[in-house]
Image (cartoon, rainbow, N blue to C red; front, top):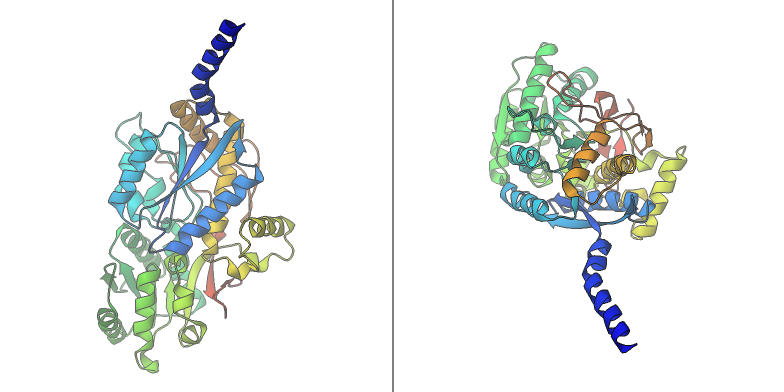
Length: 409
């Protein structure tokens, strides 16, 4: 009897590591800027968590957990996190954040190492359009966000055709994101017979004194609107500098949405904003306009139960990050449910990639119901990994309390 008990105990001890390993959750990584654009990173996290909580963090028979990493907007730091993902046998996919440069700098590495990358914010056009000379290298990046191959067109058309501006001046950050918008905006200007618009480039970390010099030079060119591509830190500097100019010299700003990813509306308060025309691109859903949308109401109530500080939709800062991350997580969940999970990381991430390209059932999201939002990528199908299109893009502005209000189409 004693020998049998000891033998049983010995077997249990041998099996304990295996049981513990099977109980270890599979991981979704979130590699975003939680230092300089903190609000955007938190919003993305909340969107992912709300969607995962709907399935009780259980997917295809496996527990799922979210691993949070902060790349601080630094491409090298993001590269280290990607290497950490590769070495992690439990890691399935990576969500990125607001910044395009970390993705652009690591795009070859991402695809050659088959890192399933889900993009709910970063907008630079090349992110989803990687092509390799090696036929075995596939495109592993999927985006549900604004796409800069189209965003510049929307911004230029809004400024010139709707707002009747005649001489826009491009004010762009000196990064891959800025250059991507430069190309698209120039094309849009040529289509509207406005080919002579000037451009000014600036670096991250620009100071107010330098920003004021830049703005005065732009005013002297005769520009009547500034087309801004900047994130919140630099956008705050430029707006503060603009407000120090004489009222007659202040120019309206039509901006990309990078400024919405931080504390811009808290620093540039309503009284300051009232002295300046400021509009920015968004996607076509807002929790502020969900009165006739039971699904959206249900999602927000669920988010409130998880994050009690969300008393009203206006409390959801950088709401775009939440909306896109929530919808993209639901697409990811549907792809996993469609293909299942084997526990073999290599097989699973390839199967999920193929399932995302071939989703067989519609998926209800906040922005819309998605019917096969992705398809097989090729040079002849450059939008294959874009869940949204130009008809999903609108313009918005800040309300009194810093909430984003969408302009009527």
